[in-house]
Length: 160
Image (cartoon, rainbow, N blue to C red; front, top):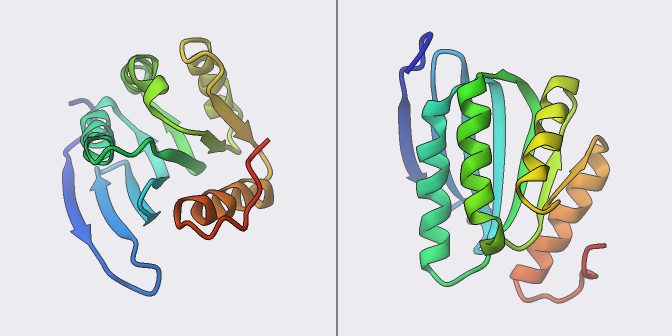
């Protein structure tokens, strides 16, 4: 672990109005919240700066969903991510390159130009699976459609 990357992680399954399971990872420089609004839809909300120590947390969370036999849709919200260490980029890209065939759609909301460049590099190793957008409303609409598909309501059209 480098530069204050002390990890605190916890799995907190909460049943609220949306019955979302929530897991949280935190370091001195940033945090990641992984929620599942419905089974088969995972939302990753990043805050601050990421280091490689978060990657095993991501791997374990996704592995639990994959073990249930579901091919999850991943929604990665990088709107509040301020940056990342090179080791993080390498580790998450290597994991994504190994795993991308196991996922449904992978949508990414990004605002930072530095983070957007990292997404472009990662996309090279994942056959273009990552679908980035800088439009919050578009990201939220795709998320809403995925929730409808996975909840069985069938009211949402298939993503383009």
